[in-house]
Image (cartoon, rainbow over all chains, first blue to last red; front, side):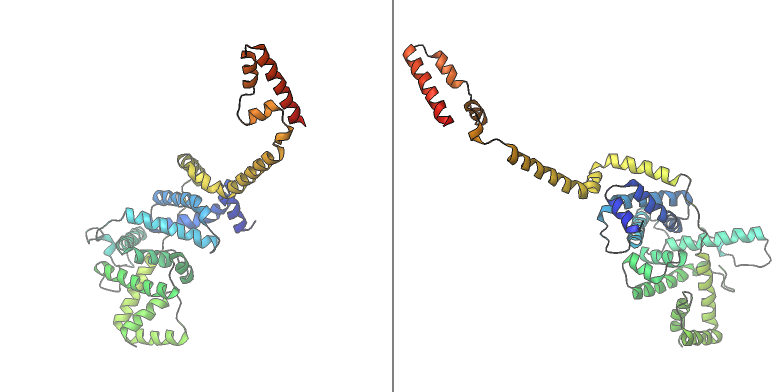
Amino acid sequence: MEENELVKKAQVGSHEAFTMIMKKYEQKVFHLAYSFVQDRAAADDLAQEVFIKAYFSLPKFRFQSEFGTWFYRVAVNHIKDHLRKTARHREVSLEDVEEGRLAVEDKIPAREKAQADEQRKKTVFQVLETLPQKYRMILTLRDVRGLPYQEIGQVLGISPGTVDSRLHRARKMLRKKMMPFIGQEGGGL
Amino acid sequence: MKCKDAEKRLLRSFDGELEGATKAELAGHLKACPGCRKKQSEYGLLLKNLKIEDAEPLPYFWQRLETKLRERERVEPWTIWAKWSRRAVPVALALLLLFIGGLVFFSPGEEDLSQAEALLLRNANPLAEAKSLFEETKLENKNMMIIFAADEKASTRR
């Protein structure tokens, strides 16, 4: 059965149709939430809230766009709200991310290297959290999730040109904020 | 090429958005500019560190979701109405039309009614006349009342 047919059935109360549609988006929504919170339990909670929101908003869907785009927009907006409510208004300090500052060295043991890699990622994401929401959003959609420009534009309701310029500013801002943690030699973090 | 333009193109190059000539121009600039090479390396590392391995939802995702949905539906019954209203409104209208049609079609005309039924339809007491007849003490008056009542009934039938 086509997706739009399933959506129509779900709109008039079919639980079965709703489950069939949503199962298609389960991974996508969970991964999107996980990209923002990097915690499995928190991402799971967030994804469930997104599905609940979509369920109750379904009658408002008027088939003016692809259902997937509409659904992704519901998810992004819900995540935006969540981030706004849980925003941590703080700058990342050097003390917070001391380990993440280490440059990559070839001779360190594999286990330590893995730990350093993990810490480095953590640092980048901590700094990412401190960016203004619109920059955090676009970096997550593009550089974490790998969404194409066009899809990002549809989900955020902006033109591909704006996607390009906002992404450019966001990456520059992230690099600037990461400067204190970037090793002086060879660009290691 | 200025370093500012090079940075712009460098960032686009990470998305594979650069075409042949521009790509070559950027490569030439990077070869000659150590500052931009450093930026290239830094951006490369940053973007690499933004890639994360995908995790899986916790077990029983759908079972937990269905329970929550049922709970929310109990809390917000209006949402059930919102969900069903698209079907409920035409059904309710059809039922109303059927009811009105039924009333019009099956309600008896006044000419088919007996006097008592007609009085009942007008919400009047059909026994009021009989009561006054029984209460009349004078025989003459009682007889006259019976005659008039019989006459009225006959004219109604006609």
